[in-house]
Length: 365
Image (cartoon, rainbow, N blue to C red; front, side, top):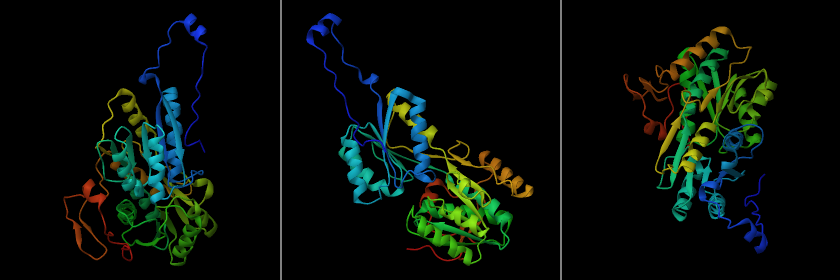
């Protein structure tokens, strides 16, 4: 892991030599690289949420070369410890800090107020400030497509979903997954187990085993380790990759993966800093159309008719013809939540707190 506070080297030259070379002008601010820091909630590892953000960090360095200098801190839970680390990153001279998990929202906002000259970007939240923006992907679009495949590959008509925390970001992914599945198989039922963590391979593995025991033969997740795909591979059922391609952990089990590509967003934000056009108070939500969300090609073992439905649905979402949360939609208590002819707005999706029809159980309080 890179040092949190990179060493600065100061080079001294004799006065006589300086007089021979002429006056040396100090480097302008434009010549200095933009210092960008990233805060990750999980270990970087080789798959999952934080891994994809770090892939983008490395691609950012390749794209901008000497104009940018990055560092990162990994495996920081969304507790008081996060605020301490964010404050350290701001105090150490970083120009732009990306905090990449929902639970970092309030700590980031508090630190942003203490360091008005530092710029902050927070992933998946909803609060902004004069020097703070938020950004997220429309990951539910990919979740819908995974549901289309799961609805076609299941033999039990029972799907399983391992959820991290019952926040809108996760609830809408579970809903979209179920809606996609029921669009091709109205008999689908989705069972959900919450593990109250983003990353805990042991808990994720136990949840996957429990869902299989309840009859689920196609699994999905909103957690960060490949444990669920590994369980599916050994148990002979299907599973999705989440945030990154996890097929190496389950070459037969993974029917497709919902992958986040943050590179273009990070490059665009840093270029704004370089150009002096960066402004706070903004929100961004990119999806399949903007290529921030990518779903890998379905497993070669998937039937051709399922792949065709997947591809058709994918293109329809990109073209704006298919909205995963278009009405009429009922919740799992039979109440109409989205009337025909309407669709949930982005703000409504940011606060969604109900399950769609087809999901068993209730959302934890």
